[in-house]
Amino acid sequence: MRTFLASILFVLALAPPAYAQKLDTSGIDSAMKKVLAFDALQKSKVGIYAVDVGTNEVVYSLNADQAFNPASNMKLVTAATALETMGPEHVFITRLGAKGDGSTIDTVYLSGEGDPLLMWEDLLRLASELRAMGVTKVTGGVVVDDSAFSSGFMPPGYDQKDEDASYRAPVGAVSVNYNAQTVVVRPGLKSGDKARVHLIPPNDHVEIVNNVTTAAGTRAKVGAKSETSGNGTKITLSGSIGQNSEAEHVRKRIDNPTLFSGSAMLTALRTAGIDVDGTVSAGKRPNGVKTLVYHESPPLAYVVFLMNKWSNNFMAEMLYRMVAAAGKPADAARSAAFTEKFLSKAGISTTGFKSLNGSGLYTGNEITPRQLVELLDWMTERSTYPEFASSLPAAGRDGTLAKRLGKSITRDTLRGKTGTLNDVTALSGYLVTKSGRTLAYAVLINDPPVRAWTLRRVQDELAEALAGFDK
Image 1 (spheres, rainbow, N blue to C red):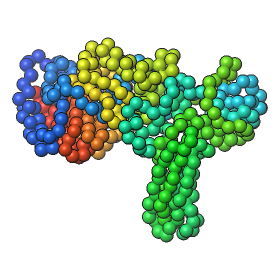
Image 2: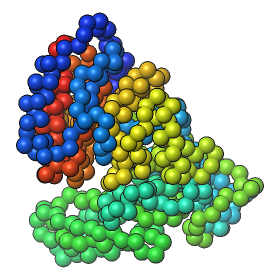
Image 3: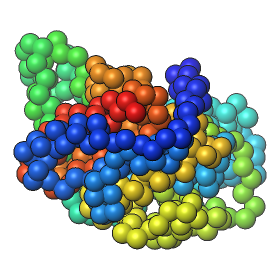
């Protein structure tokens, strides 16, 4: 939290001076031209736009009105929309309720409204509070009410690839641990034994097939593959782990957030000392159910902070669903229309803009460098600007920029949201130039002849050239 507050104070300290004379951009034009001569950039689609947020003067422009795949720079749009729509103080409530009270209750209803940060520890707290109220037995199992979201767990565009990685997790109104299963693998007691395995969160929903054996030494080579199995997920482990090896942690996305969360809740109840009969199911919380205990998420400002610092796709998709909910089941199609309308209300032309999902994963989102920069510029005049800007990774310090841009003029003066796909690398945010100007900038690279991530260094050089502007 200290880092979060310090980031806000850093942003508030940025006070761009006013400039009256006509801008001379010849120096920056020359510096950018040298970097853009790099062979791979010559064969790529490159878009750059940079504006002084104090004077609205254009410092640099290249293909500013062409549409690009922004990759995770789409999270800038999601963050701005969420902060402005819901407010940085907004919290998400998860409720545990039942009909009646006393030491024995019938069915327990777990209902949520899209908390992106609901964790196993929070379920344990709910269960412990229920036990402290005197509840010792549940006779009817756990029912999960996920009706705050429309049907369908997988965000639009995610079907373009069939990957089991945790960054491709589905979404649901009740979701736990980013809808990813962590499998902790430890060596057995002696060589030849099967490895010991436990789950975070613990649950009976995910099926584990453990084919990992214990070997001599300290080397660990553990593989994992997840696949849909009925209404759940099966994770098959393979390989070996040294008898003196430290634990290996494997994370895989799950397939059914509703039943996964329900099973984790049932486990939490039992862990807290409550005897639970029955199973886990999905269903609507009926009238007459009383909320017994509830969990309140951290403020939205902190959710956005984590989302952008670490470019968390799951959190982005959860927020993307919620921005257009307004009391209705959260729906991705309605969110797409809402996002475009939001930009229009901000005075940003939406020509060429396309919102497919909130994370920027895969292909389908399109935005121009000008649109990104105009959004960044517009946010500097909003009351949510401190929360928005402080969520962006700081060059050389934290998040996805911890190891980038930290050994040049950009250290402590640049904040940027990164974005990476096989054919996309993006960097957009704010920086302070050598002459003290605060710029909103976007550097987007699409369709390079090499893996896009290999161009991060040259992309950083473009950002450094912008920061070196001394007029």
